[in-house]
Length: 97
Image 1 (spheres, rainbow, N blue to C red):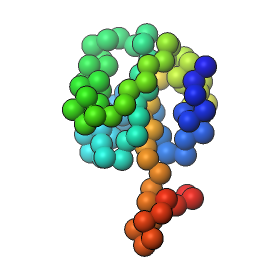
Image 2: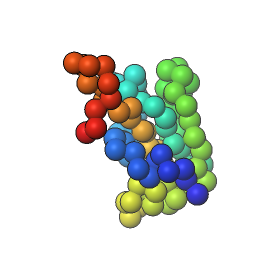
Image 3: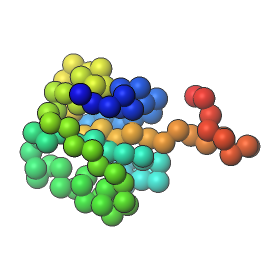
Image 4: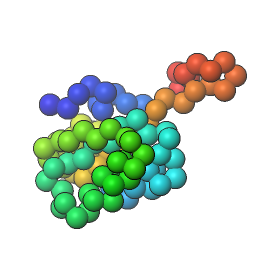
């Protein structure tokens, strides 16, 4: 079973292309990336490489179906990125949004 962080994350990016885009454009905002182990290995290489480059934690999930269900979508997902909570620039505290 996936950990509760994924199920209740307020900000996440679902899918391979969206995860790649987030890693390329806003990697400093990514807390963790989940990858499905049954996804085609060659499509995961770029995401894994970017995570290693930016030292972003990778969590492996057995199946794409399991990853999709954890995000409450009806299809499988090869990758999901959890984004950090936004920080309020006025007081340096995390916002509740």
